[in-house]
Amino acid sequence: MSDNIHIEVNHKVLVWARESLAINRNQAAEKTGVSVKRMAQLEDGEKPITLDELKEFSKAYKRTIATLLLKEPPKEKPLSKDRRTIDSKDLGNFHEKSIMAIRKARALSQSFFELKQEFGIEIPKFSFFASIKDQPQLVAIRLRQFLNLDELREIKNINHALEAYIEKVESLGVAVFQLGLTQDRLRGFSLTDEAIPIIGIKRGGEPATAKIFTLFHELGHIILNEGGLCDLSEKSTIEIEKWCNAFSAEVIIPSAEILQMNIVQEQKLAGNKIWRLKDLTTLGNYFHAGPLAILRSLLENKLTTAAFYNEKHQVWNKPSFGRSKTPEGRNLAKEAIQEKGRTYISLAFSAFDQNRIDLKDLSDFIGIKLSYISKTRQLLNG
Image (cartoon, rainbow, N blue to C red; front, side):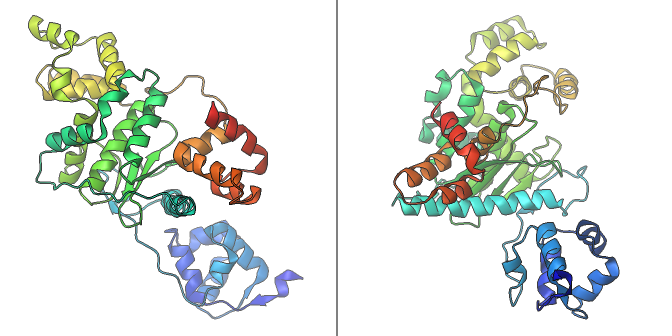
């Protein structure tokens, strides 16, 4: 029987695989069904591992058996700096699901790079840099002009607007992925140590307006060449987080533009600093922003009071605000397009159509089962 077959492994690789998920021996024992005592024997090299145990370790650590059989622990790039606010739990430590999302983003970035190389598509080298000493508002104005973001104003559907903003950011030479960040209060992250800079955005539980803000917040990190794992809280005392928040706000809601809006002019003329949700929503629809972001911009321009803003922040910043009351069931094809982006998915289909990759390769690149490929193509072309 397989449980009697012993496999020669480097016990240091087993330790590395466990620690790469930031879990202790007790947690690993629970995941694998291997006792803590047995775990210690295996990790200390006192006992050989069985084939069945190796399979359980592979499943629990999300590592291939081939990886666990390496002669030495491989070197992996570290996580970006923890940029969360002090009220986040276990600062400096992350849940294994967050670590897996970052690991996935790195793998997707490599696949994206390979697909572009396969087609001989030149990958633009990111070159839009700034210093934290620069005023974020001025850098934002320069970026808007560089990307010609004004042309996106005509897009009314907020989800289509999000896709358009992502495509603009990707044109700078950045890979953008929407991933399942369900733990650690993370809303986004940025990685600057890959061939292509990476932005990760929380996929579920966030309105598109919040994702757009996260997109440009994380782009701010890349512009400063300082990646991070962020919750985007306004309470942050970290200078780089405040800079990225200010940068993102100005990219989405240019101060010079919002001050010229008729609604704003009328409120200013009347000396009224209390805003109706209806008016904030109207402004938000124009700027592709949520009402709270609009109100924050008005506060920065002294057109509302801190007390009124804080009151609305308590109500509108709750996790349920902006979510659908009747969420649809899982749509795996839709999730694949959201996660990897239309550019990535289109490249994968083009490679398949030109016989550069086979159907199994296409399934692997997109990350879905063969039975969902037709539906994914339909959604992509819809």
